[in-house]
Image (cartoon, rainbow, N blue to C red):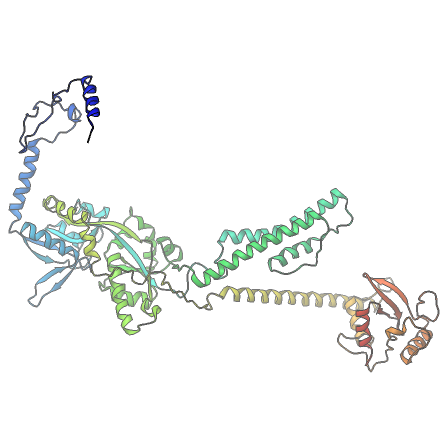
Length: 632
């Protein structure tokens, strides 16, 4: 509630306001409370004022009146009319049944649409089928559906007919598209995924190629960098490793093996550490992805697209006289690239309209790929699933022995067909358009199916046991490794035999140990080893010296003590005195050997009675092992 002061201020301000404009805008249409016009609309309106160009075709009232009159006459003409309607045996979209009195009636989605039109326009009809259950084309017109429509033997073809370019010269397709037909491939469900072998699956093809290239290239790169560094710096401490050592280091790091190489230079250490870090990350990714693939991997099929069928020359089957056959045989269609497969007997077109028979005979028994439109495939797999589930309730793999590809084999718009010159299209097409836009046709096509997907590509099983197929690459690698080792071993034996024969021929030709000019030669190490073994001079690995006339060296503790001696030490010294081959340690005549540094370790070097050198380790652990070897 405003106070008195506020009202006085508002009245003072209103005195300065401009007067109100009571005039209405020009051309305004006013309505009375009952909705009638107060003012009349202007009758003279220019075409430019309503957005029409001067040359634009303006549909006059006379044209609209003529169209409405034509539709009225057609409705009167068809009222009570008896039509002949042709169809195909294409379950579930269109099929027929013969009653006991011999009357053929139409069933399926097509005749549900016809019944809707029948109730709206009040006509009757008879159902006829062609002699052959085929659509028909230029080269396959006899006894077909297209022939019946072209000859005006029927008034309408009520079937989901694919709109192919070749048939347009024979019939008139309805302007309303019923749906976009999709022909899908169904095949036997493979036991394992077709995405590749278990060992190769974690990485793509090019990743494996790059890993192989890096395995070959990193070894020479490290070798060259080490050589360049030593040349530039003149460092004599860092030993330049050979190319073979660098290559084996790279391979050993990939296999998670250690290395005997111990670089000193910082740059060389960084090279080695960089490769180790790279291999660590790579193997971690590989292990994680391999685990995921072998347990919860996405299932893929071996045949998903038309290119898979063409490249792998896979046998496939489809209905005789259907959209797939004509799309392959017609030159300007997308599937014409499969035409050569027909002549090579990879494509089969069956006359059987029973999809269950085709599924069992061609797919289950012979391993073919069955190409069928999506509604028929869904109904067929669903009924097969129900039957198999009644046989085995728990095993999911028995319920779904077939799998359906994701990518369509063929996509075509499908419509009804009329004889050329027929006016039924103008009467029926607007009603068909209403059914399509409201989604009724799509609902009728999937009415018999459940909401859940039946037998999906990936069954979604969380428990998966590894099979031989997952480990097949492991077997291949093992067999390849053994075969390579056997080949190398055979090559070694062959070269050794060839070299032995060449040396034996040389000795036989020039005399044992003599050349052509009379000079003596030394035999090869292999032959020298054989000669020592045959003469008893050598000693095989693993054999013991006990029981032989080999004087063992003195005990380790007696080497540095000269006061007394046991029997072993006296035998050793007598043998040295007899042969006079002993080396003096520190210039003393009674010392049994000389002390030397060999490979960074201290040894006492003695000379045996047969002239061979004997090493006695000075280091305590090695000396203990040596003492244990020569004492009982």
